[in-house]
Length: 148
Length: 175
Image (cartoon, rainbow over all chains, first blue to last red; front, side, top):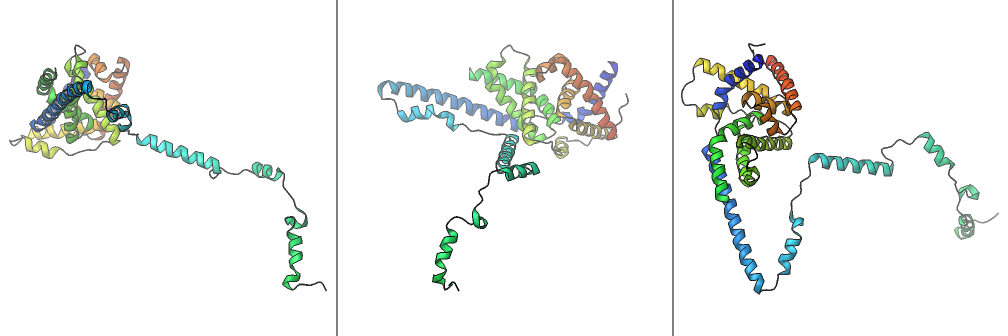
């Protein structure tokens, strides 16, 4: 406990000169004063405007535009996402894309065997599509090829 | 009501303005940033004065706002910057300092540098306990953490600070 107090005293003594030179400047205080007074003025103006609008509302029909603005004010709010959320979203998107196109994943021999096991359509005549051979035969005389 | 709140905040600026900026300086280690944060502390205090009523002593409430704002700024910046504020301080001291004052200022600067190297959770507790001389119960209210956590951070923070000071060549006689 005593050691702690000694350490505290030593720290405070040595930091004293360094920290005592720091002050909350009059310029900074004036800026705070200006900002707060602006806020107070804005609040007073808003109250007066509301009061005037309430009086007008009794006599005039309600403006659908102002109602719509008030209703959809949530759309006007600014949104900020932290960088970590953006980075994580992009990474997730890349992983999902990679899985979908199987780019990022190694195709195992098991997968290759499974693909090979899938039923395949084998056509007669060296896998030539039906009708192509017959069509080619019919066109041969036109191209000057005859049976000897 | 706003006028009343404003007068209250003006009084707090006079009483606690210097203490708040010094506390924030030690936490963020940047004089210009500390001034910005201190301004925001009093603006927030004005906006939330109704919430303060009879809650706690004003300085613990203001310190809590200052610490929260400092954490937000540091989180946004992601890192600490060491801003050489010696130039501004030198200009504020009119007379030529004595040799021992120069030595103590140099030691103070090194201590500030060592404190800035600590993790934020230790730095806050060290500054509030050793520099601001707050009691543990007050630090609990400022940082809104359990007493056990505060004591643990204080013990580990002190050990970490002593280690860093030794590395920087600072001799603490009690060691």
